Image (cartoon, rainbow, N blue to C red; front, side, top):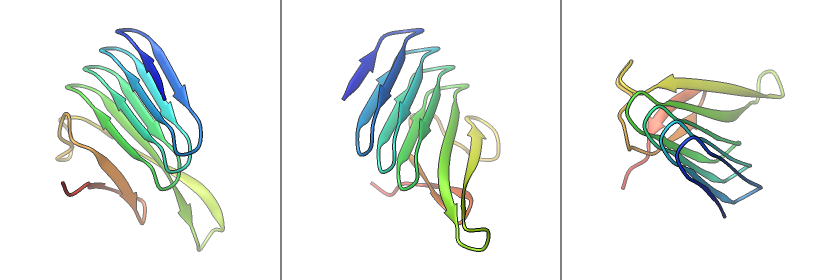
Length: 100
């Protein structure tokens, strides 16, 4: 588990949890959970989840079986239906809201 305040950077490994405040960067490895505040960036590896606050960015890895390689998908909160403070996972290259 890694935690950082506003403008901070939190990095966690496989299955870990990374949380950063506003304008922060949270990065978690495969199967991890990344959460960033407003204007922050949350990035998680394959099988992970990411959540960002208002005006934030979500980035998730996924495995493309056709190309046999890892790929990335990104979404900006407030664009294309991406909601603030809502966890997302990646499914076939698309961001999908995690059911609570």
